[in-house]
Image 1: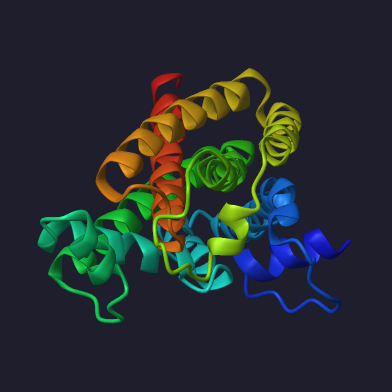
Image 2: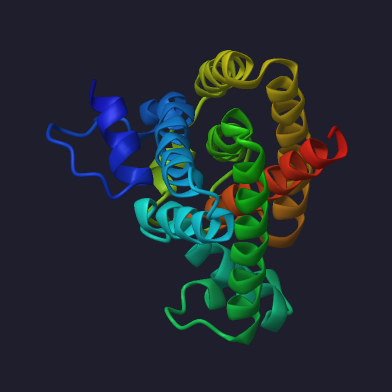
Amino acid sequence: MRPLITAIRTLTCIPIPGRDSSCLADALPFFPAVGLLIGLVVSGVLCLLSSHGWFAGAGIVAMIAAVWITRALHVDGLADVTDALGAGRTRERRLEIMKDPHTGAFGVTAITGDLLLKTVALTHLASLQQWGLVIAPFIISRTAQVMLAVSLPYARPEGGKAGGFVEQARPRHLVLAVTAALAICLALSGLTGLLLLLQGLIATILLRIWMKREFGGVTGDLLGTGNEVIETGLLAFAAFISHATL
């Protein structure tokens, strides 16, 4: 199961023995499964800490757990892309800024807003004990990464860390990932899970159009940005519809 090992190592900080897949893109169909693993960790933290009514604290700690288990990989990408958009006037300049290891005011603001919104959504879902709706966005956001990797070229001519995933990605990887995400979301949340998946895929298509126009393709930072936008957006939407149906 080398592709699964590669997927876990790429998306989490979980140490796992074994050898990586010789074809990095073969790990893409396992991204939704890794999203399920991350969602289970986050929902487990929420369930444990909110069992005595400490919902706000549970939301904060669960948000920290989500960032920790992913090594802050995706929020770092969000910060880099936001800085690039704020200061770069051309495509080339944006790609150059994204390689800068420093984080500017735009990036800090983006991270702050993202984590605050995620914490509020997790807190609300914990208060309603909607564990399936907590887990589904983590699955769908990893599926979004697969869609972006399959449907866009790598934006840097010189290549990069995510280049192997993007350049070797094929439509079959996306079909397998979407099928897995569909099965898991339906099992977890029924038709609501299906609704979240459809919304996530539509949002990913819009992100794809935007990334192609602004950057000419996708990079590791853009994959992380897509993950955060979909994950946090769907958590917020899940919290909203849960409140509206009370």
